[in-house]
Length: 363
Image (cartoon, rainbow, N blue to C red):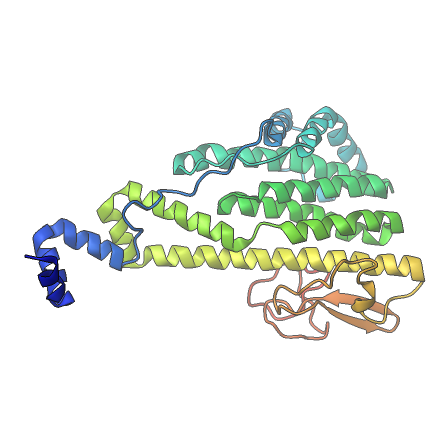
């Protein structure tokens, strides 16, 4: 049969012939495609990120393991409730290890990702847990001790190192490492929040541009979601053709994808609100220190203190500002998208549907 003759046959009949000709394999491939499966020849997983040499991650991992093995910052120790003597003991015991970690943070840094489920579960997540549980907690203890002793400059250094660590750990990684990075950064941001009234003008000018830089260059949740979905498809393929098809037909795959997108989008919005409300409150603090009063509105902070007006990740509009007497406060409308005019501030423990405004005390 000529090409012209084939082209003249109705498309529906050609598809039927193809199914009959290829049998079950042809039917299965077409079904797989119709159900949203990756095309033949598609990449099995995202390309792993390039690893710098040397890689600061190696220093962080070695320091984190050493701190964990020392038993000085075990999970049962609540650093936020520890007294100065306890914090001092933690800091002194881990001084050299924290120095090693800081050396790693000063280098190029990339979490080494191998897109194999066993490697992620048995190697990557435990290693990141060592960095978080070792270096993260040691830096937290260092910052809390400095704050308790009135050494605000030293506290800022430790807290910014925590924020930096969380930021670099969340870049070019799948979902779980990304969320671990966010958790680390949040610890540093909370410490800076608690310290803000004690900061001088010079310290505010040190913190604000660093937070602006991280906010500008942060890893987008959409990129993380795409890598995670590609990773899921790769693992579905390894499960076998029919197991993967069963997940799609049952809707399990679609539910997992939706959950990934929802979780990451929610985490990103909360993180952006946290960072932006904090850096804008620090800008207010700096304005007060230099002018002796609160600004009439946020526009006067730009560009002398802030490079641009921070955007509310929930509304897509600039953050809100409200004065009560002579004191002003910055806030986001929060996940309900409703401006409650600070009548209902969100507590630190709130959900994606909670009613209230996201303030400096909402994280």
